[in-house]
Length: 114
Image (cartoon, rainbow, N blue to C red; front, side, top):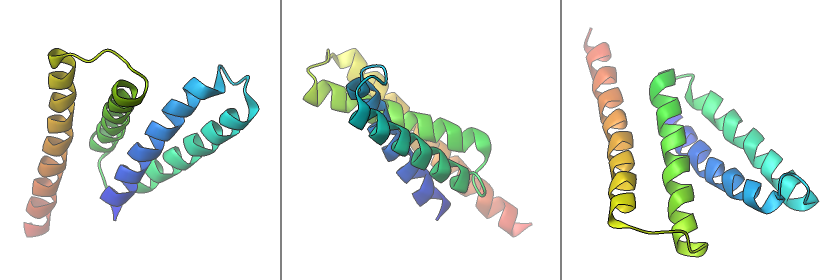
């Protein structure tokens, strides 16, 4: 369940990061309220995930999901610059997130054997 919380936290981070764009420095009321709501939800879900997932793994995964998701949405919907190098490094981030999950799962198995 902790990993579900963590993935949900990462997805809500994408929402609030995009909300920051539309809030125009918190001068646009409705997007500002939505952004603050999703910041709160995001950090709540992250804190729930951190009850079972090590802080380093949880935070790196959280920020990675947010960074990759926000960058991809920016490229697809907002016409942000796309290059082979940018896509490569985003995939490298995804690989790091998957690697952290695999390492965390391996450590849980080892701890259960002791």
